[in-house]
Image 1: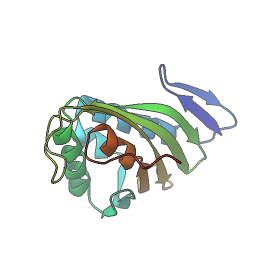
Image 2: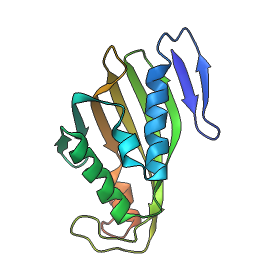
Image 3: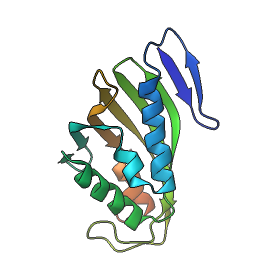
Length: 158
């Protein structure tokens, strides 16, 4: 097992046999932050599924994945993602991610709010024997982001 943390991202080896998989997971985040969507999808296999569980969306092609990422960039041109922690479990890498930015473009049907947001999520990547991503499960805290942007009210406190 290996573990990664952001700022700086460090890899600590604990009997890891597959350091390529966590490197691929980290490279994805770095590619997003550079806005290099081709590099971001280069680690995916020819056949894969990417599930955005918060939005109920499943993607099955690199073009769909690039369009999904472009929607995020259009909604927040300065969005960046930091890896808080990544856990290497062999053919699975689990990453805790933190995304932040300014909502300076439309987010689905909602207009730009001009407000900043910061939210956390978890991404689970499954790899094949060649080290390509074959399944990607994405879980982000959409509610706190919508509250920060003024599109939702916080739940009542008890």
